[in-house]
Image 1 (tube, helix red, strand yellow):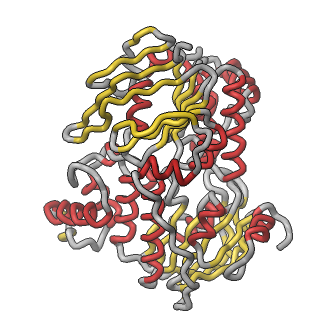
Image 2: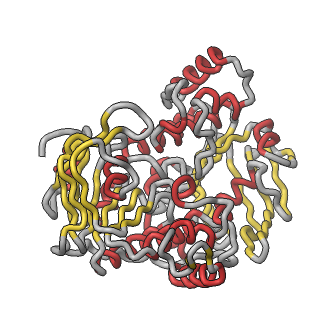
Image 3: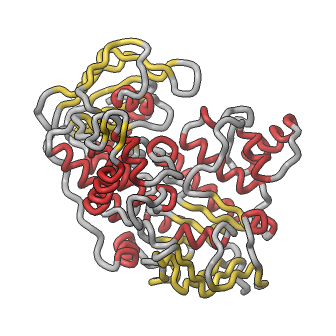
Length: 483
């Protein structure tokens, strides 16, 4: 059988970094193919080659057996290749329908494109409001829009780069079912994911990259999370520490009857939230998307104003937002420039109205070494880094402020096993040093492995549970049920 997509002998170098080394990959008709590897292994670069966004230094691309030259994404779409990118590509100020029409090249007839988007979204089980502005959508709905945009171009195959990284467990499971439906309708997929259970649940075959080269390829039947992790890392995966005991230090965050408006929309998101966070704690915020956790986190981080109640915070406060490319980093700025922005006033390189850039660059280099950020140097553009290295830099900048409170929203989103373990270790170390840590994660099991106690947010109300609360109790409360 002729592969639908075949890449052979692909090489790609960015400066001194060899991103891809003699990589060969094939997608067969009717299959779901998992593409795995650590952050920076070359997965996204390989798919960008297949989508015409990156020109390979060597190698060939074939679609349905015929060699093609993909000068850009438009050429890739002409060959029936659609891609869902790791980071959102929609224009926030435009509506859902306008973004889909722009991506697919449809005529700008408002009523017509709204109807087409509605039909397409319902056909594939991905409902969206065509008239909604993208800037008002949750992260989960933004990701759904990215899938619909790819389908709107009449894709015959889909390249999915971390499509579930921002989704809560129920929405991630629904997305996997959608990918299965793509297969039954003759649309095969390449699935890049760091969630090994997803690959095991839906994939037929797997290819693993390590440091830009293929180290494993074959059927996924018989593989386990441990075996896949070993292929990815070259060794057994790192062991996680158990949750640390709850801290008993001073109160660093106190919310009393706090109310807050829904971000980017009308109505109330929080209703009389009351809770405390003490020094040395890691308080996990468990919630299903859209229940007020985004607003709660931002109130505790001091980036959103409450509409009622009292908020007391011990400053300085650092915030690690869910979308690092939209809220934490300026992609076109250098790492040093991003650190200067994140650190703000009071940094040692601030000299009245002047900045000591030599000192800022030197400190950036020190943090890159301490946090394992792989980049050519402090002058590297943030957008040029892999997701894992971007997140390491975001966390380094957050901790550089010497916070007394650290609020983290899905800090391991899109990260591989090793990088996830590093983030967990950094948060544990911050708590051990006396920082009050508040963290939200879409994966409840990951949250329970890290947090010393849990606060459930459901229907805009926050409920503090005692340390060691059973998973079943937490799950029921997340869905609005009794304890």
